[in-house]
Length: 58
Image (cartoon, rainbow, N blue to C red; front, side):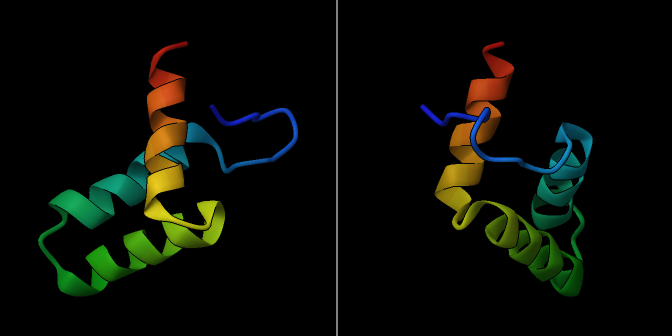
């Protein structure tokens, strides 16, 4: 489980926007930008996914 008290992540609505960009936009440039933003913020897509899963359980 991620300890969000130690690490500051972007606001949840922004993260959700990046996920939408990556998955649903249908534009390869926008998909790449969303993926790159998530990786820049979390270090990997796996960590971003883990964070989102933790947030949905709260």
